[in-house]
Length: 297
Image (cartoon, rainbow, N blue to C red; front, side, top):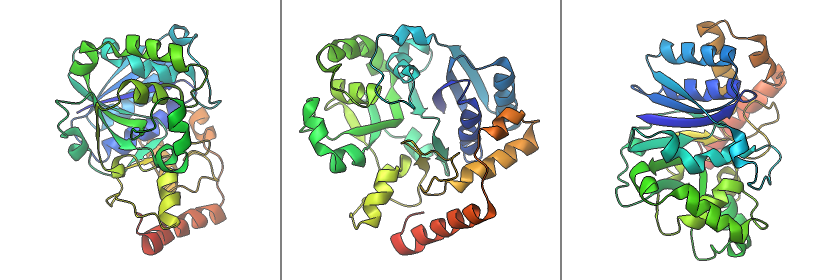
């Protein structure tokens, strides 16, 4: 199973947490990290975590100056996210991979996702309910009014298709028309150039705060439980004490496990906001309420 992340040094502790969450639930994983300046110390720590679970990992150096002319529209998302558009050129020896954002926690097997047949598709992804349902008018601005919009935080990518069709070149061409309009950077680009070429999978593989919010409001979600990947997209992440998305306390638990595996740098612990006992209880109670009242787990 090939899994790709993209990270800079600032996000490397969260990368380690997300990787650990995968390793605890999956065997024979090969990780590729698009490396936008991760320090050697932090890379060594991540390698030790992966080695502990008999996984494999490679760091691929990326120069974010390659994307300096691409639009930056979200403060907490760097230009590094555009590196996704050139994945098939960065990693040439594989035919298929799962791309996962750093702000995710995996809580189950990825076998079903990995074994999804995408021979006739460029990728498999989950519907983005925030755009598709709550902000549908935005789609028409970027030529997607009749298309289902997907969230790019979890993608199963067909590298053969991407190589055949030069995704990066197509992305640049698309940006010439929509550069001044887009809000969601490379996610918009991928939606724009891959209309009709995406296989949609169940949102249990990319469960977002928007999906949770809609379910609580009575939306008849088709998301199957249990959730496999929690995606903490938006400004509040699993390392923030105020995060109220499902199972956010898992990130803190995984940090403790990492501390038991390696001699964690102090900077890693400092990357997580201090959380009081009261806040921990609130997170736990929220998790129980989500399951009992809303069927979210």
